[in-house]
Image 1: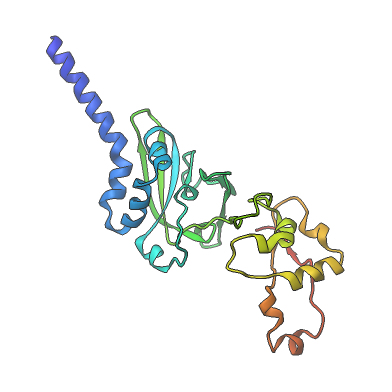
Image 2: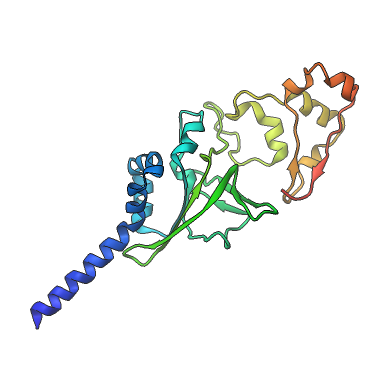
Length: 233
């Protein structure tokens, strides 16, 4: 009787261990997700999250990595420590990256769901680890890239609103895209309050290069409309 009980306990432990490995195994065994799995495997915090906590993981395909130009992939920016199905995804979720920079969720009229710039491919995996924590994986078609601050600018907020971004744009890693010209026009037009308003908005901000375009003066004259806002992102 004791041997039978011990055998049953061993089987239950083995089943729990198998459940815990399911999500990691799915990543490891899917050849289309091998690049992200390699990064995940080498990240201790990500491994701990996968082993011990509920989470949602947004996994870029290998094809997405082929299009990705940056040399750095922020693995923890692809993880949030709460399990979200596609239907339950809120407008923003906090990532597991240092400082918890947000991920922005949008849906279009076709029913597509986007995480920042990445579309969720209709492929979903829900797993439960040995502690009974729910874990969900969404496959996405682009690598997620957070807004990060350049070295030497530790006082710059890493999650700015629109006005703070305009004022400090040169201090962020955004491929040296400048907005000085537009920023000065916002200031002269006294429209800072528009960009500092609470709520969800979409701002269309032309970069400095756009003002150098040879068609700019012929098409727009000397006037640029500032403070044009789409009330919902």
